[in-house]
Length: 94
Image (cartoon, rainbow, N blue to C red):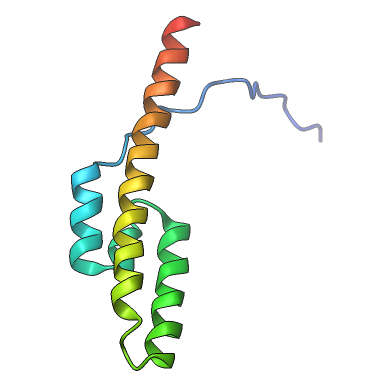
């Protein structure tokens, strides 16, 4: 039985940008777990880093990882905004 031919050149649906304020507040209060809102890969990395540094430094490694999570959330959310704006700009030009 032959496989039907479907067009695959349709555009992807528009993605909603991440809210920068929400991303920063989640990272501020939840640390690496709040980072999952803005960046799943960043959330996994910082959670792993939090566990490893927390064990080896008897909890003192939590503060730098929390700060990294906060910065990463801000950068990921602003990058998300820039991507969505660039996609909208290129779609309107085409």
